[in-house]
Length: 228
Image (cartoon, one colour):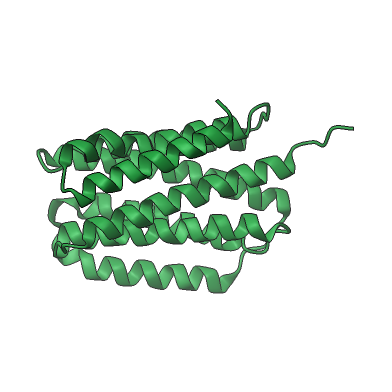
């Protein structure tokens, strides 16, 4: 199918998933949750058809491991091991996003900004300081995950001076939404669950994956050699 068709599939799957949340129907949620990023992956592949690059492979891997993470977290309430495995899957997904952002930054010869590191460092310090007393046996895995996603955000912030500002905005906004989603998830799980928590987690997560996918597609399309 064409990329535009997969975009429509993604919109339909998203509507179906949030309909399931509205109806408090776990069956609908379980069916459509893994399909959210699966539709985005198909859209990403279709939109970048014919392009060969390591960045494209890393983008596919990031979305692929996100699908694995979504699938594993469906069973997190029945067995804590599924939560840990889901955490590992998303950690790997973020590593692939890091590789993507580093490659883009290197290609554009963008310098790092000290104030970006300060902002990210302050975020990591406060969120981990708040969560540590509540993490129990999962303290080390969660702290490592937080470090990795913070580094992902740092690299996204360093891309803001890309020549194509639209690509930069897609990627940075997507990274910020991912941080918000994971932060709310951690607070909801380890500190105090909120009624609105599930909505906040999934709305920001879907927006994050959509924006990151759009940003990578736009970069790949702009960077491909032009036909004469």
